[in-house]
Amino acid sequence: MVSGGEFSLILACCNSIERQQQVLNLLTEFSSTDIHKILLSPAADTLYTAITSAIGATQPEALMVRGLESVVEINQLIISTNIMRNEFRKQFRFPLVLWVNDEILRKLVWLAPDFKDWAASTIRFDVSHNQLVGSEQRAISA
Image (cartoon, rainbow, N blue to C red; front, side, top):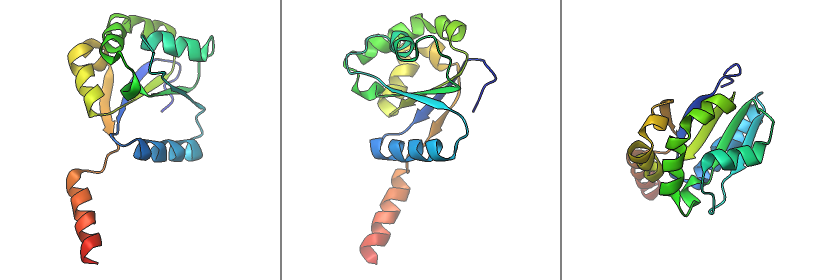
């Protein structure tokens, strides 16, 4: 995950906060990378400012941002992220992992297409509906 001192964008999509926490616990336990984590305030108005306020002058090895789904003015935050996208590349020399759910991912596609295009791909951590239904059926018939 370490990018050798260059900015990269990674989108981690998970619709379950509990599952997200499980993945984070595993990453923290098994990764040798010092992963800095921030939780956005519901009042956050720009992603760039929220990150710079949280990390100050430090450049962590990697940064994970959670809480986008709780931001009240999420459309405005996403639009401002797209407008300020070049600042991310100029100022941040580390991988940025944004935890998103399907709704936030759709908003990124529509409101911040240029920023979203920087993500190599979206990593999904959800259990599919079919897997969930299958496990429920197995539990019922057991």
